[in-house]
Structures are given as structure tokens and as C-alpha cells.
Amino acid sequence: MKPFVVAAAFSLIAGSAFAQGMTETTTTTTTISPADESEMHDFVVKEHRAAIAPPSGFVVTNGAVLPQSVDIYSFPADHHWKYEYTTIGDQTVLVDPGTRQIVHIIH
Image (tube, rainbow, N blue to C red; front, side, top):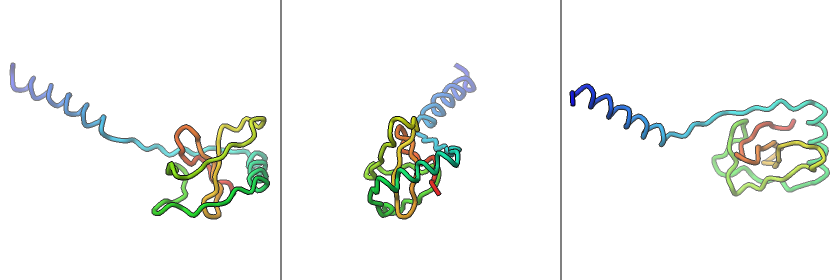
């Protein structure tokens, strides 16, 4: 086998193995209508779940993934909102329950 062919084959194999070890992070932001955001806010206030202190080193931002130690809560099923929520410090966040990624900060 020619050295060029061997080098090309090695490059493909090594590149594939390297790519499998990498983790890609994507930031997701979600547009919530003002009416839905207001309803979500009212629901969160009514439920009165205790806010938690931010975990050490954690910053509340869109796209951040919540640690497993942070509890997330469901909205009523009749609203058909596909997100869950939690309150960290003084910020209530919407969370994609499948990825635990913050998709929106309720203001």
C-alpha cells in the first residue's frame, strides 16, 4: 500500500474517533408570547415553590444545562406548554425536560 493511502486511511479513522469524543453545545432560546409568559409567571407565584440557591459555579443563562440536583416542576397539562420550570435565586427559568437546558428566563 502506498504511504499516501495509508496516511489518508489513518486520518479518517483518527478524525472519526476524535469527533466521537467531542461534545457539542447548542444554545436554545424560545420565544414565549407575553400572554403565556404572564400566565406562567402567575402559575409559578401561585404554586410558591421554594427558590434554590444557584449551585456552585452555575450561572443562569439561556442554554445552560441544569445539574441533576436541581428539581424541575411541571405546568398544568391543560396548557400544553412543553416546558418545565424552576426558580434559581430570583430567576424563574423554563427548562426543556428532555435536555434540562434553560430555554427562557421568565421576567
